[in-house]
Image (tube, rainbow, N blue to C red; front, side, top):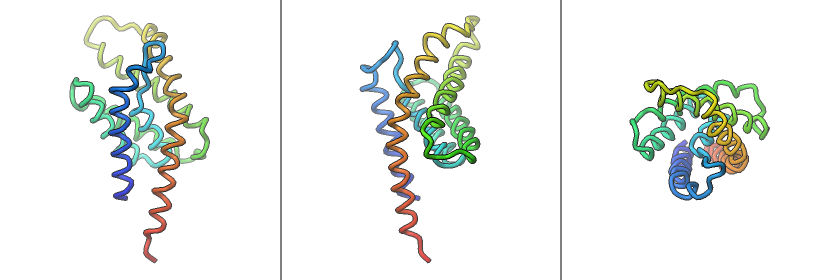
Amino acid sequence: MRVKIIGYTLIMVIFALLQSTVLDYLKVFNVKPNLLMVLIVIVAFLGNNIEGAIVGFFSGLIHDMISGRVIGFYALLGLYLGFCVGSLNKRLYKENIFAVVFFVLVSTLVYEYSVYFFHTVFRNSLDLFYPLRNIILPLALYNGIVSIFVYIMVYKINEKFETSKKLSRKY
């Protein structure tokens, strides 16, 4: 379990560094992928709702620290996202990459619409189609493509965690 915590923490820190530095230069249609959100969905998909909620909370907290806005906003969104995806994955085949891409697409739509709604609800300019067309759909597609590579990486790391867990059991 300690190895898994350290591994996920390292992945979160590396993804946060990539997201705040390198990915600024890899924008497509003026959006960059949200690696931390993709990680939340994939960990919750491969694990359970508690694991997804914990990774979601700490990934969101890291995102809060990077964005410099209110501390706790992205942490709560990540917590709820990880819990919901982890609760829905119980009957799904974990090796199905299309299910992961679907979950990432839908989660990006819900996550980014929530961010947009809560950032503009106190202003009187609540336009639903502009962010969908210009920001959220391109971001969802970009996250879906990136999720394939992140899923392969996290799946292999998760397999190593499981094999080390099985080897360390005492009978």
